[in-house]
Length: 79
Length: 231
Picture (tube, chains in turn purple, cyan):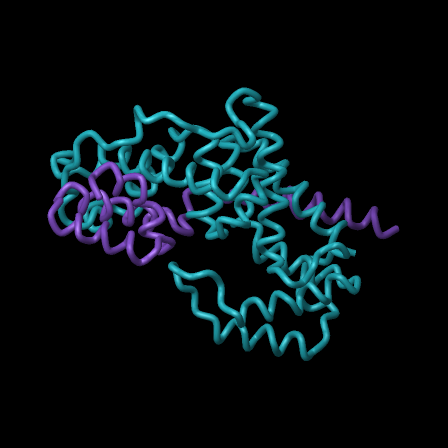
């Protein structure tokens, strides 16, 4: 396994989707390659930082309009 | 009638007891999907909503509206479109509740509807930027050029609001094809299969786009996080 091979598999590697023999090859490479070790760590951290992240505000007026719309449309559909 | 208060909801007492127990027992874990207990609770609410209890549907809306708006904003990056997509998603969910198969989670089903609504609006605004199942190839931006240590945890080096601004600005720069897959898989926690189904692409395409999205984001975050990036 070379650096290119690790880069191509980094996503599947951190998701635990690879076969054991491939994982073994990657980990053998990681022991000797600082750049790929950092790449794996940083990709993992990137995923961690975004997981369930709340980057968007939910304005009260957006919420109010949603409930008003649902109240109106559901009320109409049930008549 | 779509009621605004819990007091006039008309849910059976047993259901409320189950809800109370669920709220006590379920502990949010940022690395896992909601627990089985939450799923059971959701199932009860869905069953009540299906049988005509509008206030049970309202409870589902209250529970997921913030997340659904986050999703539609993350996909469209346009507040008006995000709001319309969210409203239409909840309305579609309500009118198609009878078609919801309870072997999957209601939330996952709702996410698929909302993602679809958001994608339709995104494709309308950017018809040439969001492809269906075309393979995305090219090696030019694939292999990282320079790898540099980020030093001590960036989470500790940046204030929460500053980190939020960085994450938002970086994800905004992703091409829509990549962003949509990344948002569904890595922000919302959908499986590869569920993401493929929601976007209408193959699982292989999801994996390929996810890899590229993660590598691109890492590369863009590198500008902020590398040790000499913050003075």
